[in-house]
Image (cartoon, rainbow, N blue to C red; front, side, top):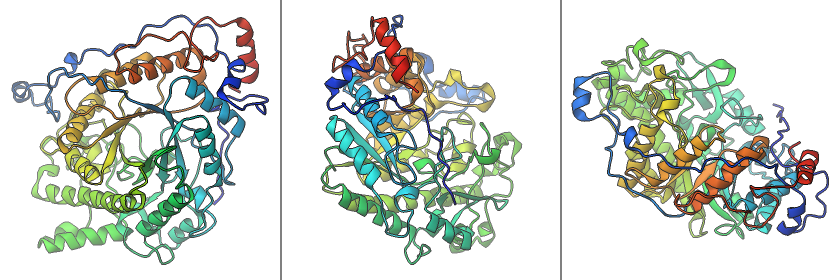
Length: 542
């Protein structure tokens, strides 16, 4: 299958950067237009976000219980390093670094803004595309040396999933061709929904321990890949490479692909569908049911769980008094979510062994599925594999599993506010984040965050600051901003990022703008001569 990569205008593009040798050389080459001072980033008081009381919940059945209890206003004043995600196509199909000169310029700009480092996807579909155990790390080696030279840090994602078909995917990178050949011979290697639709984003966890990839199990393949990475970059681990994020599902997240956007299959805020109909998952379900003496429960997932774009009340399973809360519902959801936890356990056990002693921290990403969070069943979370309902905390076992291996829980949707969401979707990203913060605090698991969608406004940045600084639960150990692209370098957007990075570095206590950035380049936010504006238009952001 051919890979179709669209060139993205994600980097500062300078016509001639041959003379780039140090950050100081950068100062005369890039400038930003004069902009009006914006309001300072202020974290708003969280009292208006307090959850409904138990009494209110009893009086009004339509107002659902949110997990976690609002605690007194607690401040987290520690420094939080900010990273920026690099473009998805940072490394090309041939294994080469994409646009190295503009990349260097962009990294210098980020360094000048006080950013700690960058995050990059290390795609399985690119590195091992030529055949089993044939790895090409060269494009990533060039990037790592560039990052090291600038004094930045790197978060590396072991991306065992397909790129393409989800929010923000700007290019297409399928799984390795030799893996796709095996899938064509045995379609049950990938997740399957009730109607038989196959999803090639990620291999089904049902075959984790079976030698279905030319004599190796998927877990062995992932382990060999990570072991090869460790061998190739051992001199950088724990120094330049600060973190390894271990991919465990679609979009690198520990979840099932229950809401696939490709071909319009799913649209927000649909409940999604269970992904347990490949032969391996069906066999596991049947065996589990048989062991309980409930053979009829093992014939497949719930028959009344609806379709991708329905709402909970449209279904027999997810409605307020639906079968999700029956004996059968508990059985199925325990099995479905339990399989996901087992999958994470297997991969992280391997990763922990491989990277132990290198000084590099490990992290795992959990999706911020905030729609239908205010309903009893939390349908969209259930189909994704998070057994989180009005009566069940689905994030405690996930946090506990990650913490067991010393893995940081990286959570998304940190920038979202409840009031920004459509009323009919019953969203509560703030309630969800509070619950996850409490789960990590309870289990003593470290927490990091990301924004789920591209945002450049002060409101989004302020919400991240408030998430980190107030309420009960853990503060953030790091924040990764999505993503490096052309819009980020627009004057007002850049100003907002600089303010945000400074605020996070000072625990949110001082949100004032500096007169210049760390390296005193023309990237400072202030009065800039018009000659620099002209130079910017000629050389940058094309």
